[in-house]
View 1: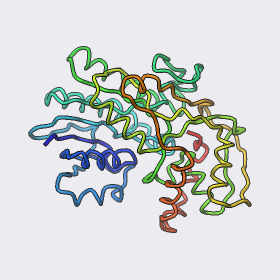
View 2: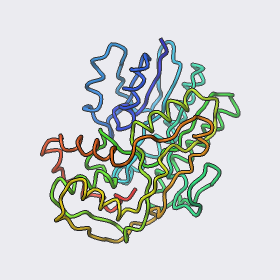
View 3: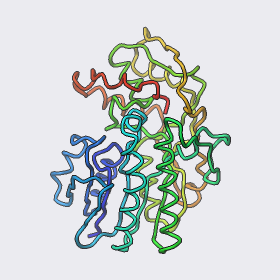
View 4: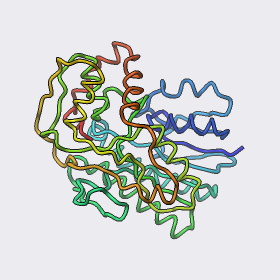
Length: 329
């Protein structure tokens, strides 16, 4: 039985990856320190015979006994509400954490896939964003702690590939949504749905013309799975190129929830918030044979149904107001 270590296992994407690899008959080691993850995301996994959980901060030395075949590094705050509150930890998990895991992969002769992000492109001057575009990033802006952590992560991963011959993969993840997102994490989709469920007006920062491209989580997980077992070692975009303006997206949420009394309120755009976001996925199509299959209408319905099942206590947490101005990420 192949053994895989998945960091960030209690997070949104990490928990879905654990679930997928258990279904593929892997022995899964899930690692998380719960700085942003949730025990609720993995409680159902802990009952499975081939799942083992390790409570550990990847920024500290990592010791895994015995065989290890694959590593998926998905430990990182991934929402502005998180990395603006814990900027040092965000930088450490992308630098020290990645270094530790690359060293572990080298010692075990394991394949390692690291989770990068579309944020390495910054506020792009090229549209849509191809992997050959080097980005337009402010390293000292409020978002720089996340953007630069991920850019360093890519650099050190490629250094290990070139210098040590390590089998590495880099996935650049574009906006992804689905069940197990935190309702109060500050990103646009849970922010809009949370406001709808509470009967509040929807808040847009900027004039609403900025765009995003939303990929349903099952499609993303399939792309990551294909990339792990490919021969490709360079960064590759995984996302849905179906672009939509934030204003139109807000209207889709109003239509979905059926609350025609809701209004859209405009506020000032945050510093360095990207105005455009759309992946060029030709590499993923050609190299992985991958493209998204789930339409946004279907994905939004599945996500909305998940949020509707949350308790009133979860729904009414006030943390969503802390950095809600960054919800267009």
